[in-house]
Image (tube, rainbow, N blue to C red; front, side):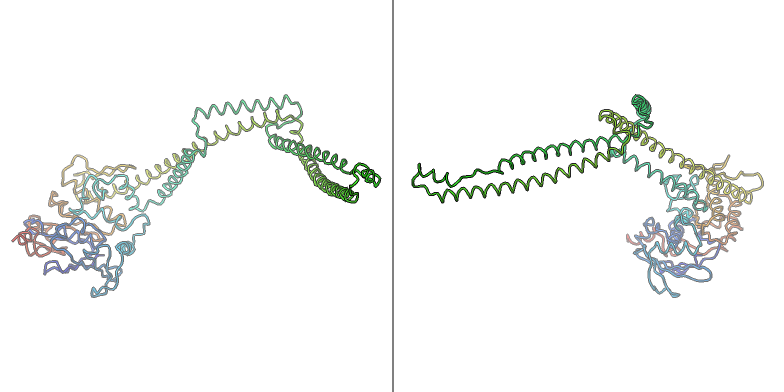
Length: 549
């Protein structure tokens, strides 16, 4: 529980305020003086509970008080934990020793986690501020719309408020599971649609889907007709490996063409070799006979030239023989490859006996059929993903509706109990909460007066304080303005029945019944008034006038 708040900027008589379990009252004066700090002090309580609105929404404090520290402590299991939070660095909280000497600091998020842990709020779905913020109803925070009691701030959507209420009642576990399923199926559907838009997956309409079904049926009939016409005892024409057979035959054609080319080249080289094998021979008589016509001819030189030519013939013949050997190797390789391809072709027992035209027809028909089946399969997957998402959303809706009905029943039952303690039997009907998935209604029947509506807001908060992990309430004075004395007495009696802390602001006490006066004076932790009795020792208007002077 909150144990104390200390601020050196407070009025001298009340710089340290100590709190108790249950009801804690901040009293204004009997004239209902404005700007004396009642709501501001409630905002400070919200500030020490980890809120930010004291900084963000109390402009007068920032302008006129400027920098100040708020020292405060919490009591948990008989251990006091002391802290300091200031207006200059509100995102950090200082941890202190027993004399408020600063030891070290932590972030505001860590401090909120500290409060959540020590208040034993076990929900993993709600932060500490999500638990308390909506029920700290202070004028500056504008969260006291009696027709929308679960709204944390103006214009917050009802659906978000409803989910937070489910979490507050610690009934969100199964909802989260279905939400995760919806999220997962939504992501799968989104990714699949993205692939379709990018052209990675075929995109067809329902009309095209039906056309594909008819075309697939027709292709199946055509393939069956081919099998019948072939009359070869082949039962599974559709599973022909036509493409493979065509590829083998194409390879055979290529290798055979190479073989023909090599054989032709070999024949040409053999012919050339045979022509070069017997070079012309010149005898000694031939050389002697040349002297008759050429008396000065040198027979020895001619013989040397002749021998040179014979050497050239031998070299050329050797090169041609080497080329023939190379071609023979290529021919052997072609023959081996042809042999291997023929063996492979023999393994296709049915397909090999048909012409390429028939095989191509089968292959094209099967390819088209598979394409159409693939398109329809893509369409079926898309529809399946849509249905999965739709079904999971329906499951989520059913689960959430069931949980909301349980919460609604539980709250309305307690509202009836509280209302019975506030009124004579059957005098006033209890307010009724109706929870739907995206909206809710909270109202009384036959009485929509301001006082009744604020009373309804108060008793709803009391109900939640009792039924949930909500650790405390803050109710500002405007909630009590239009409620009659007798009803207020009973409301304050309800407040006093709880160990959990309830902080309220109230003024004009002397105008209420003696019983109310006794009750609130007994629970008063801070009395405020005009001028020097105001929270900071002056009223806002007074300080403004002094500054002007």
